[in-house]
Image 1: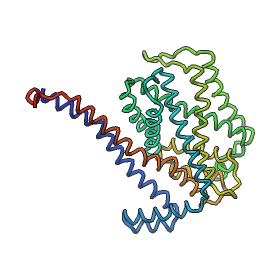
Image 2 (image 1 turned 90 degrees about the vertical axis):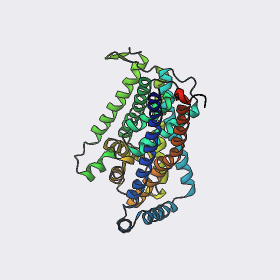
Image 3 (image 1 turned 180 degrees about the vertical axis):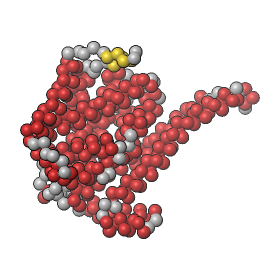
Image 4 (image 1 turned 180 degrees about the horizontal axis):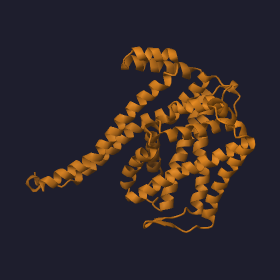
Length: 357
């Protein structure tokens, strides 16, 4: 019995330990992310090369302060509001998935929003979003009674909602701004596919989205794979996805749009297209925060905007969309794991020789 109690105790300590490791890893990624961002300036890179950790932190803080000082307060406010829109839509992703599973009862909006916030704050910064985000959701939603297969469906549907919105908005951008790919072709030495082909490809993407909606409207039957049944989302679920998916991406792109200087004279559609293409490339590369990848795509699509302005705007985006949420999420993870550890400890059965003491 004593051995069994020790095994239970070890099991109860496993997930809190995993959570602590994730927090340490996230803090480490946060430091290297900031270091890589400010090192884009050759002079700053030399300072970082000659200093230690504390001197590097001072240099990083100084560079960030200089870059942020040139942005008007009103633009900060608009960028902050855009961030709230993006993260509210991300929380809606989870809520939509719970509605699809019919498991929304007993799980409050605050709980869903907190779980979603921590999930995306960690996955956006750590990378490998399916694994890092899936771990957070598994811990949070199994605590609310969902089974592991149900959490897997929830994670998959949230990922699909994001992909659906990305495909839809890229289609809108390619049809509405077909010239957006031409600067990328010039910068990377690709062959320009032309205006007509760009519009045609955008129309195909929109048609694929329309087919998905049509499937919900026609009530496509469930798909059975190896005994596992995938239920096609109902029309009310798809209707919510049609709003939530583009809302998150528009909010995230809005942060960059408001952080760019007013004299850049760049339309929101172009900024949104650059964000969608660069963010998708960053996710495919699995580089945390898309550092380097997003800069390359933005500089190619916005050749007339000063590179320093582009770097500053992306720094603001990373501060609002990645770094600040990460800082906020770390104590939330620690508090959750502490509460779960307390519950697990209470449930550990004491050996007979210790009972009654």
